[in-house]
Image 1 (cartoon, rainbow, N blue to C red):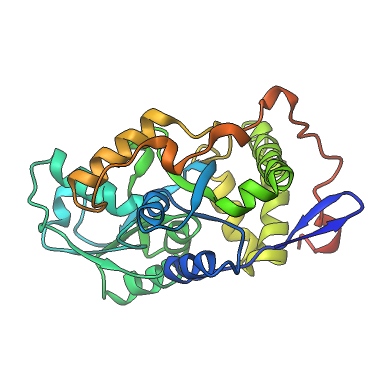
Image 2 (cartoon, rainbow, N blue to C red):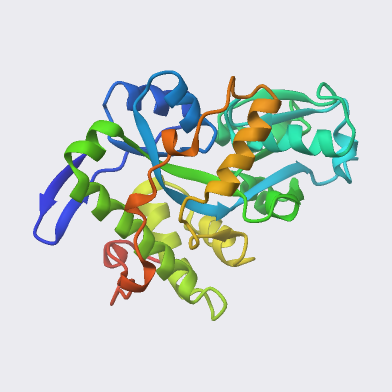
Length: 297
C-alpha cells in the first residue's frame, strides 16, 4: 500500500509471521508487493496468481542451526533427526534435499517439519526439533542466546544463494509502473548503502539495526546488529539483479525433488526490466531516515 508525500511515494509495510498468511494477503490484494522465498513465486504463477519477481531482497543470510551441545557435527549426522523449515516452497527445503542428494542420503533420511521462523529458536531450545534452517535473524537468535550454533551457512554449499525475492502483483506492474520503479530503486539504493562500509566499521549497518529493530520489526537492535556486523559477509544486499541461470538451476532442482510440479520459463515469473543501473542509483544519505526518532541506547 502506498501514499504520496512531499519527498516521493511512502510505502506502508506490514509484518507477517508466516509465509501462508503473506501469500493469502497477496492473493486477496491486501498487499501490492512482498518479499518471499524464491520457489513460492513460480508456484503462485503456476496456481494462476498473476505476480512477478522484480528484484532480489538480499543474498545469503540463511544458516542451518543445531544445538550448541548436541551430537550433530556434520550434515550427515542429521540422519534420523527432525529439522524445521519455513515452508515446503522455501529455498531452505530445496537446499536440504539438494544436500541429501549430493551426499547419497535417501530423501527420507531427515524428518522435515514446517514451522513459522519465529518459533524455531525456542523449539530448538526445548528439544522438539534437532535443527532448523532459516533466514536471519532467526538463525542468529539461538546462536546469540548460547544454545544454538551454525552447522552450515548455505552460502558455503550454494554460493551466492538467493534467499528472498521481491514479488509484485501484475496489475500493479501494468498500472503503476513508476511506483514499482521507485520501490525497486529505493531497495537498490539502501542495499548499496548497507554494503558500502561493511568492511570499514559497518556504521551504516549499526544504524540500520537500530531503525529496523525499533521502528519496524519490534526486535532487539542488538540481535540485528549481531547479524549484520559480527560477520559482515553473512548477509549481502548488493548484486540483486534477478539472475536467470541461478533461477533456472533452482527451478530444475525444485522440479526434480517435486517441490514444484513442473518447469516454467524464467520470463513467466520474473520481470528484470525494473532492475536499475546501479551507476545511476544515489545511495548517499546524510542520515538514515528515522534514526533521529529512536534511541540508540
